[in-house]
Image (cartoon, rainbow, N blue to C red; front, side, top):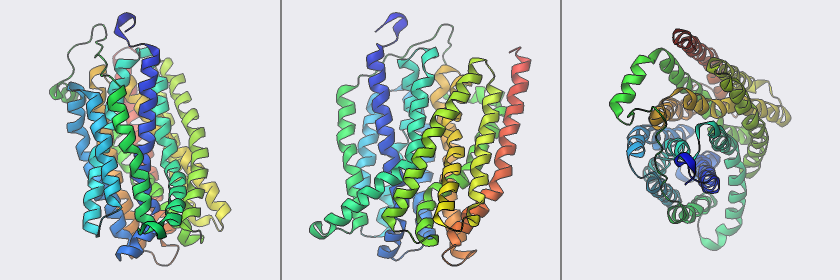
Length: 432
């Protein structure tokens, strides 16, 4: 331990780096189902709505609902052990998904992935707070969220290579390519989870000067009641925005196969490669904006930047029907990914700047809860249902994604601006 109780920089950065690697793996296991949608539909005799429910109810609902009780344990328990168990649980569940004999069992295995992954974001926020002094936390948190932003697309790129490998091995191993792909992407976590448990020690909880006991749920609820004018629209904006953004992530690769005639592997590679490049730019741009304004204690400007970014993302997806060829679709994917990257690049940094130190895990978990309970649970299922019932033909998915983004654009921007106004008033009242 160094002065003031902070761990050594080498130890702190090892843990932060391993958390980033675990985050990358979690997004691969989370989004691989979206890439494999059409093969699963053909093999199991289901429709796009069922896949939307698999992504939503099978993952999103439990992921969202598990976050708050898990965050309570994280704020009071052994975080390293909780993370390690979570990695092993979701990895085993991903492997088991490859052997699911029917849709119902597949739904259950995806629930296991959700419960395991629910530990990661709130645990990371809590661990970073005890590994780094306050003035050095923005970089590790920014890198963690950058990985999340990159892997929202990168999962499809890695998944495309895994699917190609599975396709070549499938005849010898007797598993269909989509099943073998799930096994391939699930196995690394069974190595990474034990490595984490063996090599990472639980850091001491560092109480900052003047910090009162903030670990109880009652204290967090009292804080949220005092600041509801900011947090209510702030949280709701993520739920509303995620209806469109999660639909974009879940269905764009499949849309490329249906509207633009791409193969499963090619669609994953296109969406993944273009998305990774755009997400990399976003991962540097949006946190840089956040750091610049937060250093000047102007959190309301970071919230404004969030509104701009999410607005850009929704506007780009709305324009999908205007893309008549794959080049146009690629341009839209790039702009949308850059805009949606503001959510990962700004939101957690804003919460970390505003929320009391020992409430960060719970406050972050509530943000994850609302975004996923509304967006991930309902968004992919809603856009799939629209493509099955409201629109027809090979362009049905493209039209449903566009319509959903068009509706969510003014709602998202309006809610974020309400939150910005509320924070500005509170800051003025407190003389900041």
